[in-house]
Length: 272
Image (tube, rainbow, N blue to C red):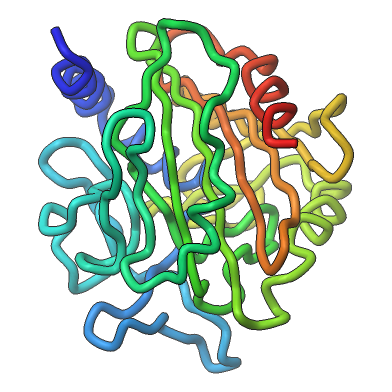
């Protein structure tokens, strides 16, 4: 069985676990909206900041759909909440990744390339990047990125994935995101998810996500663990500021045992 057949098996398992895991996936990454498909720009709220999408839905293969008005099956990256055409798959083998179609390449160059994971791990098809994510109220994409890129490794038998995602911005609003997230996490022990997987206040929504800080990460990285209550989904996250943007690394388990936090620590160590 090759990696694509194994990946299909994972997607089948996720489909069988139902909508609760699909919603949790969006929430664990922050959820949110996507750039407008027709204009190549992000929809905005009255104050000019990007607005959350009004609709997310599961596609036939169990992946999370994109924003309202787009067909989640039409784009090459079904898990991204960007509309078709905004993100494309690139590279082959260990270089396989997804990137913003009209980006300038600045995010691609900062992705992890060879994290110290075991032989059971392989590069698998990217399911991001995602856009307008929030962490405990901090919006990671305050303006449209100038570039965004995503690479993913899978330990398929363990239903576990390691992700590297980088967003860079042309505007000053994209600076200091990790520092703002670190400050928010000081007073955040969780949040709720609404029925579309978007972050709401703790105690509200249809699902609850518990948040715990992670220590012992290299300087500049802020780390935390998200546990979607009752859904069997645990994600360890690390975020740091890079020139003109941020780098997000995470390890998540969709089923079975919780992911090993040392996988995350080793990965961010390798990022330098």
